[in-house]
Image (cartoon, rainbow, N blue to C red; front, side):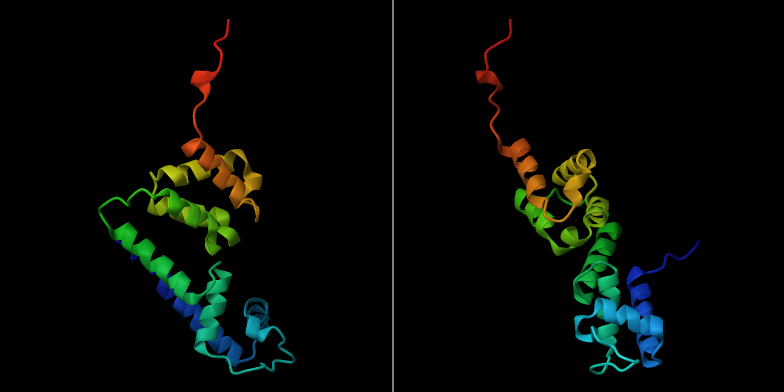
Length: 171
């Protein structure tokens, strides 16, 4: 039976390779660091403005994966592994959790990936299914700044009163 690779171990190996490549002053590695790490924005002729540590390599790898920090990425991966290994289904999210998800840094920066990851963890979650339906019907809502529109549509569906009983009946 083939062995499934641990995604976190894979990211750790990537960070070690990046760290070694920066130590060797490889141009591609330096360009990646300069692009992703705010403390290394100006690398000139292979000269780093400060010592490059293993934690810096991990930070770059996590940013390239769409996370704010290595800790965020690690927590997400461990949580995903625990949810996958669990035999009990994940609970449905609450309204507040759904809104927190829409406002999360992960959804803000990579909405499609964040939604797919959440759906893997909670495939039958009502709010996630509604977010998927809304963004499938209105893909422009996945652009930054439209989370409030998604929230508004969810609110309308969830809490807006049904006035149909007060409308006049047709002839």
